[in-house]
Length: 291
Image (cartoon, rainbow, N blue to C red; front, top):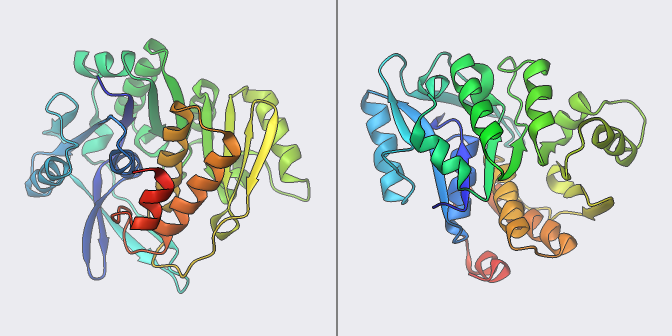
């Protein structure tokens, strides 16, 4: 049975020069796979050519499971338009409804969640009642480490849903913009805001990624920071997903937290230096990860 279950969207990210398979939970699963972690990925594709192509992509990358990838006859496979600004930071135009809005509860999904060591989920797939209710049922049934990748994409979320998912999570990962929204902006120190957030929701771990400035993590009543690894940006797609995959892989191996935060930032920086969300790791990253 898989050590980690990733739940949520799968889609095509469409750039000016072509398209790439994507979706935050799928990207996390891809990076876990590169890091030799036993991972399962649960989602839904449409009964169309784009869905067939995504299934072929998953098979090629050893991430396809008949029991975890559903086929929706109601909605099409998702194709997202990705727009890059002058600094290669991405924004996304996401259609609705699409196949991953229709992930239904099944005995296969329940079995995978109950037997996982960690379940990783985001907020985007929870914009629909069907997929949201499926996830909430899985989280109620499993004793696995529950990892919430906040991943806000306006207008595809409500604060009520974010609060519900946050309250169920053991580990919460967000970027600085998301932290400003959920923890609060203003002039207060980020550490103080994280402490206030922790006292409200009681997670075990809070990660705030800060782009080229690294990350800050609260864990077991201590703060850990990494200054990051500035790089020439290829694009930012998938950098946070690779950070999260590396972080969760290290948590499951009980790696020292400071070492883990530094390692996750290094992998995230490498991915930001490349084009696309899932570049193959170079020799330096493989050595860092002990691959």
